[in-house]
Length: 187
Image (cartoon, rainbow, N blue to C red):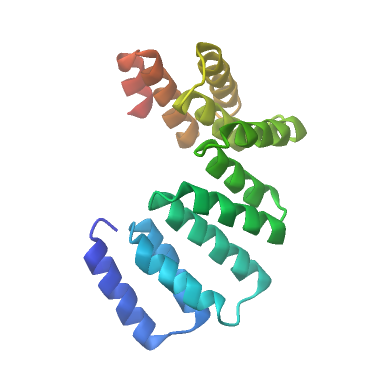
């Protein structure tokens, strides 16, 4: 995945053997991981014209949203995530939309969605991490940074060895300017 040209060549070889919509969708996922977003979006569009299950259509829409996000088209990513939520109202899809929203001009809506999901599942450390990280990554105020940090520390008490939480706490320390403590968590 650190060699996008090689990844693209391998994907092209695989698609010569299997050019089905499912194969195109799987290939697009690999390309998104390799940050080859234009080719991934093209393959997703091709796959969506084919015979995909309802679940695979949701996956395609979410993968296309991620590709657009990585390519810097946040408004398109948000629109696609909203479309995916219309197709699939599960918490995973809702969390994906919320994460797209917090990275957009609609940040307040994304934070509110995360807070609502967390109020419905108050001990969900994944939700705690997502909301806490969103608050410390680009805080609107010192209070929001503090609130996000407290949430991350609480999640860490519930799941002390969770790598995503350790990373988020490290980032919070970094935002506070405590680089030594940040390095400890990131290591």
